[in-house]
Structure formats: structure tokens, C-alpha cells
Length: 490
Ligand SMILES: NC(=O)C1=CN([C@@H]2O[C@H](COP(=O)(O)OP(=O)(O)OC[C@H]3O[C@@H](n4cnc5c(N)ncnc54)[C@H](O)[C@@H]3O)[C@@H](O)[C@H]2O)[C@@H](O)CC1
Ligand SMILES: Nc1ncnc2c1ncn2[C@@H]1O[C@H](COP(=O)(O)OP(=O)(O)O)[C@@H](O)[C@H]1O
Ligand SMILES: [K+]
Image (cartoon, rainbow, N blue to C red; front, side, top):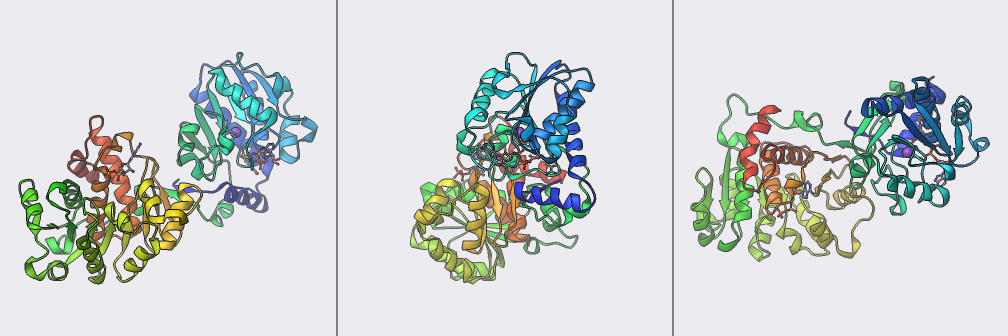
């Protein structure tokens, strides 16, 4: 299931479930059983389990899991935060059904268990942990015992992936329900959660139907329909012609990486456009890729029109001169789909509106691919705040273009509010030139008429998978050649 629900959306679904005839008690019972199942599947040899139970429904799930595990012969101690008489509703009922040992959280013995189940706080946590809860989390993390977190590790903000106040349980695994939340996927949340088990707890379809996803996990099912395979009667220009703007002679590598990647992503033709001395360097490296001077054939604008260029990539190694800026303006004017990266962000420091205006002069789709540093440079002091998901979404709305906020958890966001978060990129991608390859893949897909959001999301996923194919020792040059294996799997 690739839809991500915000914790708030999840709460609405839980309430709608009750209205649709599935009670909170039933959901909680199923949630607690799912936690017990995760615990036994992941730690089949655990004989002693310490369950930390908080004051809300997350604690309720913990009491259910305690009961189920005890019924299966596992020794359980529950350490509860606050007075049991303070529990309300379903959580109070789950606590009364637990008849085993219960002590105050402050009395928990962290040296005793083989496994700790963290049911202190889930999606309802609204402020940083303090007092006894904060102290317990510190002791859990120092204990060296594996932790199975219920819903989210306590302290983690399920909406943002941040530890509230910098303090959260470090889980070995997390059992969550119904849908993943953005905080399970965004960093540091993904690392804080460990592997996540997602359980269906009997939520009625009607309750889910009304919930608007906060985002999607970036998976082929999100974009596969929009990414074309070549038609039987394709020729090179119908498959899509990509033009890549090259910088000066001693900075040609980035443009070439983008160009080769665009070709491997399925563009029918690729042309690198640049000054003669730069093209001479390119000529020593490329074969199927065409080379043109902006002065030839009547200039860049004419190349775009007469050579039926469908998509342009500008930025990798482009330089910040007038040439690149003019090239961008003419690409927009020619109606080309446009991938904007790297040096272009330096041309508009603190001036996203200037770039937005330029983008708006053309009808072609546009995708911007900044990393955090470039994002900060482009937006300056007026940078959107919040999680990476919130920042990318706000930026896309302001730019009127798709934003690819790159990183280990790359977020692709569209101006209409759709967003995809990637979790498949290996850290081997943290290597110079990997971003240039991404820009090229994106341009290659946009040239094939994939809409900007789908093209960008597909590019990010393919990029991550290609990196996995290469594995350790990867350099950016290896990525394009790894694409065919990934594309054939689709
Ligand atoms: N029907 C439902 O609503 C279901 C809820 N489920 C569980 O319920 C959880 C959400 O339950 P809740 O909304 O009760 O939230 P939590 O159990 O996360 O706890 C929130 C409670 O703690 C208090 N609180 C918030 N921040 C605090 C802080 N920093 N220090 C001390 N107290 C604080 C809140 O006022 C509230 O009483 C989910 O994570 C999930 O585990 C599951 O049982 C499935 C069904
Ligand atoms: N730790 C990481 N794990 C996974 N992917 C990463 C990591 N760090 C960077 N990446 C990815 O690698 C690429 C780096 O791009 P970029 O920062 O533009 O580098 P360059 O400008 O050198 O090409 C991006 O696609 C980014 O998402
Ligand atoms: K928890």
C-alpha cells in the first residue's frame, strides 16, 4: 500500500471506522494482536518482554499485546506511565483486561527483558517528551535491548519524521497500522523506526475512502501508467529528442552524464549544445549523442524548433553566464519540457519568483531538482519551513513547477499538492555527478511525454534502483548503463 496518511488523517479514519460500524475497541484489539505477531515473528526466541504503556490509545495497544503474548507463554511485565485510573475509553478497557504484573514506569527494569515493546506514545504525541516519559526513553535507548515500537517510536513525529525535542525511542522495528505515515519514510524517522511492519486492523473501506493521502511512497504503481514504452511504429523523434545545455570546455562532465542518462531512459535522440571547444571535449567521449553549437543551424532556439526537441535539461555544469539563462528562456518559449538543475539555482539566488516567472512563460512541463543546499540558495531567507515534505510541497506551489528535493529521502512534489517520498536510494548515490544523472533521466522521460510529476518520481525511483544494481564502488558514470536492467524489470 503506497498511500501515506498523516497522523491527523489516521485519527479521522479511526473515527470514521466507528461511524462505519467497526468500534475503536475492535481496532485496538487487532492492533495489539498485530504488535504481538510482529514481536513473535521478529524475535521468536524472546521469553521476557517489557511493555511500556502510555496514557493514551498507544498504551491501550500495548496492554492488548501484553495480554496476547502472555497467553502464548511469554513472561510479561507492563510498566505504565501515569495512573491506570486515568486511562479513558478503549485504552481503559484494554488495561482492565490485563491481569498480569504492572508497575510504575519509573520502576521498570531494563536489564531484564529480551525485548521491549514501546507503547508509550503513538500518533497522539503533540509536544516533546518530558518528565518520566523522557527519562524512560533515555533508559530504553541506553539499555541495549531491542525495541519494537507500536505505531511510531515514542517521541517521533509521524507527520515530519523528526524526533520532537530531539528525543525519541530508537526502535529495532516498528509495527504500524492501516497506512504508513510520512514520518516512517522521511529521515531521520526511517532510521528511528527500523523496518516497519504494516498491519490491516479491519478498518472499513468506507472509512479509508474519505481519507486524503498526505503523500505516496515512490513506487512504480504511482507512475508506471504515465511512463511510456516505445510504440511499435516509433521513430527517434516520436520517442522524444532531448537537448542538454553544456557549460565550458573544462566543465563538460555534468552535461554529458545528463545526456547519456536521458538516452538510456528512453529518449530517441539526444543532442548536447555548447560552444565549440566544449563540444570538442564531448566529441572525444560520445558516439550516438549529437553535438551542436548554439550558433549552428541558426542558433539554439532554431535547434529546439527545427530538431523537434521535446525536453531540455539545463543546469548540470551549465555555468551561470548569460548563455545558460538565455537558453532556459528560449527552451520555455519553444514549449519544451524543462529540467532545471544545479547552476540555474545560482542564477536566481533568493529569487524563486524570478525563476517562477521565467518558467511560466512556457507551456512545457517543468521539474526542478535541487538538493538542500540549492533549495536554500534559491529561496534565500524566504525559504518554506517544515519537514522536507512540507517544504517541497510549498516550493512546488510557489514555483508552479514540480520540485524534486534530493536527498536520501527524495521528495517529489507537484503544484497541485501531490507528493511522493522515495525510500529506495542507497547511500552509494552520495557521489559527485549522481544528481546530473537524475536530471538526465528526468529529461529523458519528459521527452517521452511523461507528465513532469510522474517523470520526476519515476526518475528518482529508477536512479535509486540503478544504484542498487551497481552496488558498492558506484560512481555516477556507472548509473546510465545500469538503467536497462532496471527498465526491463518494470
Ligand atoms: N481507534 C483508534 O483511535 C485507534 C488508535 N490506535 C492507537 O492509538 C494511538 C493514538 O492514540 P492517542 O490519540 O490516544 O495518542 P497517544 O496514545 O499517542 O497518546 C496521547 C496521549 O498523551 C497525551 N500527551 C500528548 N503528548 C504528551 C506529552 N508530551 N507528555 C505527556 N502526555 C502527552 C495526550 O493528551 C493523549 O492523552 C495510535 O498511535 C495507535 O497506537 C490503535 O489502537 C488503533 C485504533
Ligand atoms: N545518503 C544518500 N542516500 C541515498 N541517496 C542519496 C544520498 N545522498 C545523496 N543522494 C542522492 O544522490 C544524488 C546526489 O545529487 P547531487 O547532490 O545533485 O550531487 P551532484 O551535484 O554531485 O550530482 C541525489 O539524487 C540524491 O537524492
Ligand atoms: K510508540
